[in-house]
Amino acid sequence: MTIIMIFLAVIGGATLSIQAALNGRLGGNVGVFKSAFLTFSVGALVTALLIFYFEPNHAVTLMDVPKWQLLGAMCGVPYIVIMVLAVQK
Amino acid sequence: MGGMGLSVEAGLLGPLGSEVGELWATFSIFAVGAALTFLLMLFFSPRNSPSFFSQPPSLLLGGVLGPVYVVILTIATPNIGIAMTMIGILAGQIFKSLIIDHYGLFGTTERKIDVKRIIALAFIIISLVFMAQG
Image 1 (tube, chains in turn yellow, blue):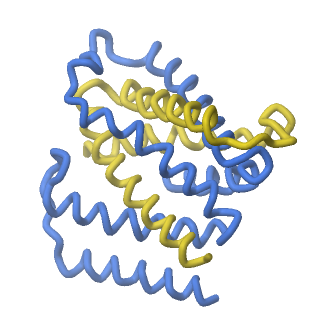
Image 2: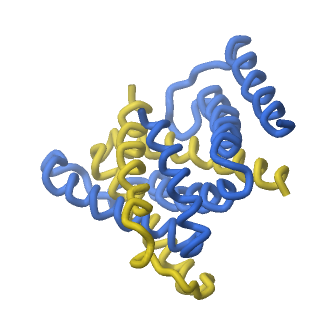
């Protein structure tokens, strides 16, 4: 189990660096924020589709959990913006 | 800085994912992120920047890869812990980045693999093994 999870994490990291390369290049063409917006909006669309078809029902929804648990996104945005800026340098 | 934000994100996502489901947790990240970056883009983006539709489609794939990563993050963190997940991610990231840099894939500048870079990768793998045993 642990091995599979580590393997998954390594694949996740590899995807992340492909994404960094692509986003950096896109950012150079259309601007940092525009590139970050594309990442998040397409990501939201893809996950919305996945939820629609694959997600089982849960007793707890996003509206019920303590609000601080929703702060993760606030960390994601700086990451994407910094990544786009850094790859170009 | 970017990396620190990322592991805080992983720490928050793990528990959230086991409560409301991995996909919902991922969705919360992307929905809030899209809203925030839309505002940033609206007010701070250079005017008249080229449209997405004038870009080669392959450049736009970054958006599709994002969810893959976040879903993995959400699934792996509760099982093996944040530190382990991050090192795994790091290993994959560095390995793949070396290849991208080496061949100058996706239009990035070519930076050849040298001994230093190989040693760096070896250390990451060693730390992964140590963490797995501990």
